[in-house]
Image 1 (tube, helix red, strand yellow):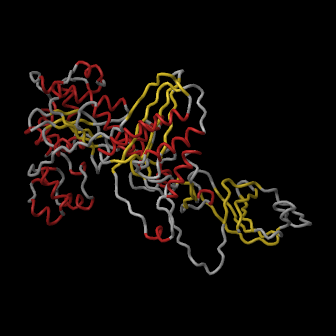
Image 2 (cartoon, one colour):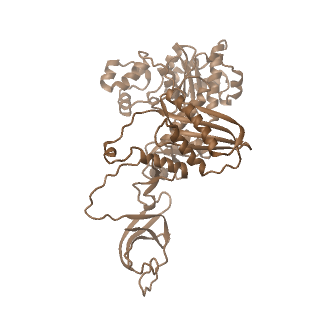
Image 3 (tube, one colour):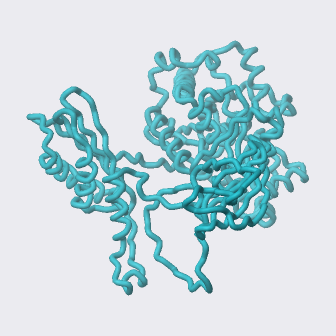
Length: 548
């Protein structure tokens, strides 16, 4: 049986957040699902935890407990990009890497044959905390690997973590594991590394280490002995099932293994039954490494530097044909084209275009590139052209019956959007997304539009009124106590205010800055209907928008 290594970076999303904001390290920080008072806290660091901020709390409640809390959102795309980037780092340490599909931050590596890894450079790069220590200091650290109630088995833990002075294979694997942890530490990720023989064992023990320490097992017996001591709360178990098990006194993997497998399946379902089989070694999961998604790339050095756009596009079309053939053999289609132009002075210019849908059409990619380059003037001639295509698995698509019946070309709007983005920038085609918040100026945001949804018109009983909100409220002139001609809210053009509808008070924002407003609808002499408010904090009138 080959050797496996498990790398566990706990609270992976929080670690990505701290890597994005390194000045937040040492301060109370958290990841929330949305940056709003009713958002939910997903992960917290130790500084926030000691101040009472816990996962599952509302963002507003967390700020009340810790006003200095730094929080932000980690989007799914950023999380997936962080996993892929970490996979690329780990592939430099092992050719086969399997990221967990359910738990971001957990990775398995094939460690077979890595005992021949040259250890001299790894020892030099290992952090001071991971250098060899005396038996007394190592035993003290190992005593805190799991629950303090497990001190009776401290000798077993120490034996599992210590390496014999006469085992060069274990020393080499230890050096490799320490170098792996140090490499991720340089990327801003704290992790635990466990090397052993069984897929589930190294995973469970790595989860119990909470991102600390490196363990290399010299025998399966010691590996299994330490697995049995892992607390169940460190594993991914459905909360209700874990609570029921704790009421029965089942706290560790050893307690779970002691239960009958048929009873576990009947009472708790297939998921926990599978975990029971993995822990008792009745089921062994094989390593399933993910294939590296390396985009095909071609590079050409020009004999004579040129700034002729037509010549560059002709050269690009030849390269695109080769790269599309590579993607087609992989069963993929192009979703992104990256063009890098190296100028005579050594400066590199990069351009990126995205087609409306995954495509193998060379002409479509060249046309988008033309739109991108026509608006850019090259300061120098180009001496090197590098082109790469990012692919995606092709899926069969069918046109909707409504589009065919209406005579519209399927995907035509999406291709038009792609052409507009290539010519004028990525943020040129957007739409408003409504949000359930109390402040009008924060009730919508702009989001990118990739596909045009087919219209589904309704038959209204009357013409609807549209409230148009200003991106930023405009200050209005102060209201005079003596209004001989009426309140001239917007000057002579609109005339005086005929009638005010309101007030509609709005207050909040106590977790940041106080907001206290009285909203009115002002009917003007010109027929316009304006939406205004009086700010009770600043004692001024503001125009929020209009209704038409």
